[in-house]
Length: 240
Image: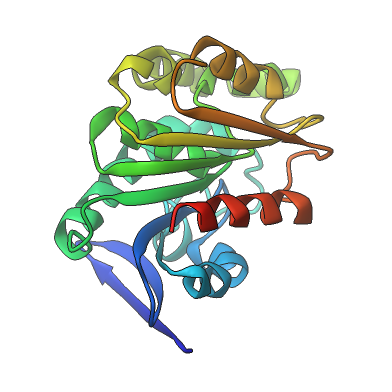
């Protein structure tokens, strides 16, 4: 059984797709901040394609093949201050790719890592294309990022902080949860994540327990660990 790889650019959106002979469902995989589509497809592309998924990854805006300032500079370590410029547009890009190139499938599943998960939550508030959502070390509540912001960053970037706070009031998926369209939500998180604190994830889970939603917690920080990866694979298998 082989896996076919398709790489291209559609309407300025770079994408990478892995598809096996037995593809039954579509799955978008979205990287986190400072990442790119190739990094995570090296981890997930072949394994998930072999399970039976048509796996597609894109570069988020300002990342990968379309990297631009401030991410061109290795001396800019505070990319989270740019998420209001990345998340809504990247969600729109995925909707465009689905509608233009992958609408042979009735819907798509979605797996987002860290910022990639926030893009997915945003996507669910603006479209009805997501069936099963897998949120990995991520949160629907963008305000949680402020809990871990270095005080020195707040001091050094006051304009960026102010702009981000204003934008989050508008685009924060947690504040617009009733707009989310999906089939199921499955969340995977570390119990000592110091980048995306688990508190906001647990709060979302507790508030929406009447939804088809699950939360699995692991002995981990802000990394995808082998036990977490195996749990995700088991969830993916269960939906084939």
